[in-house]
Image (cartoon, rainbow, N blue to C red; front, side):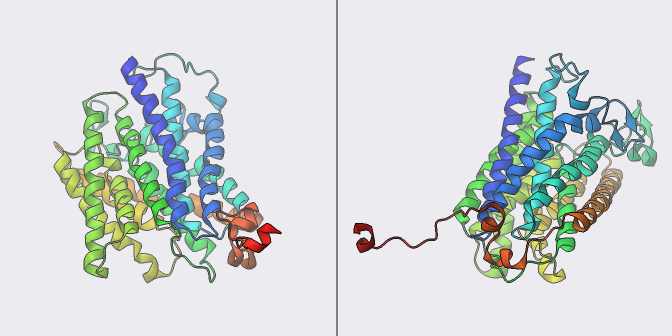
Length: 419
């Protein structure tokens, strides 16, 4: 028990690190006068979602009183009351460790969406959205997939309705090892909906202002992802080791796939492409980390990197402003990882599993899209999303936070200093 508890606390800490790492990744991709705001959106999410998760998020996700398989009763464990968090839970270590681990997933999932909105939305509106989206989109999806709800292996789930049950569970059980549907498909869909709703940026440069910062953020995301995927074994065991290997394999192969596309299409591989390819591979393997061999993880990741690189170009074809490529990296790679694993998973009926994976992916997309649209529309009508065009042009950092990432004032002359 002690080794498992130690591993899970370490994993929770690694996943918590991913949100500040995302701040670095997004901050470097943003423009020079948008960097602080972009980073603050991740840090703000960390504050807001932590609070609501402790108050009602755990109860809505993993409470015992399910409401139609869609969400659990938020009042049952409100504020974690009546929970024996120091007593061993179903995985053999104190239940409070499970709460800590799952809390970090809720935070990073919500923070991912912010990349689609760089440089043009009110910080306070984003904070309110974070609380509402986590409550009405993420927590229900976590319950549906991991809490025994509609998209789980439960005998009352969709998979059981399609192909029957064996020993009280779905005969063809859905696979979402660490969050293909719950995290990446839901966040990527929300990013697409908000990008369309909020609209395009004005005449502001969208070029990344600090590529070394992007690569540092990608490196820390890769490091944190070992907790994300390895911790989803819920034990310090061989499955955690397999998830570690598959995570590394997919990230490395996806990076190569992405830069290969750049080399063929654009004649030059880029550092931004390498960093984005790593993240795309991590996204791809997330739902499949415990279900593949390392060789099949290489194949899944390589294809994921190619598809994500091509997916980023969709925003140019269809004209939506996904500022930092959340749709291409998280939605496209998340869809491929969730659906593509059916071709590579061992010991399964591949065709039936493919049908199940497609269904849960589509349901997660539709659910996230509808919830995001309703929340986004309500906030647009009340608080408003966009900052003033003048503030957007002058830089959101100064307008929203009265700060700048860099001191752009001219250095004093030698004569001025002496005087």
